[in-house]
Length: 165
Image (tube, rainbow, N blue to C red):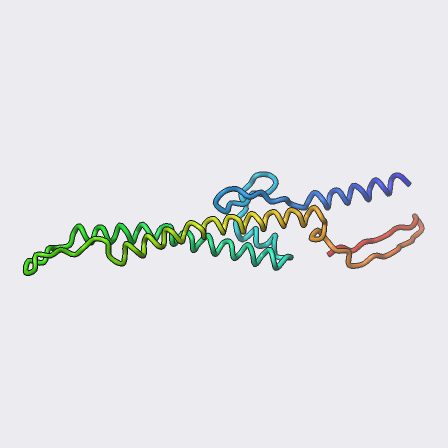
């Protein structure tokens, strides 16, 4: 009697060991339980069973891209406007020079200001996805589902066969 219970627990522990906890590091980097970096495509494969977490992860990655574009684009616009103002020629007829802070500078400053909350928001969104994924693994609702249970007998004895998803 002890032998079948032991093997059942051994198989159950083996299946449980395949559940992979995720670890969130800064800047959207996700590590597996062995501290190896996981690519975004691999994370999407892990989250494929839970559409809500997958949608939140994709939204977080989109926010990261948008934040990076604004964070890089803002200073580029400011520097471009500064270079334009420095290299502008003085209008000899009127004696006036084109002023420095033009619309490009204001757009660049606005892009920098908008990028900060977006970058913070993507980080929190991905942290929440990792936390929810790990909590789901602890609860066991995403591990596996038993599709079929059969009671079998033969000349060697009786047993239960479980067919997993």
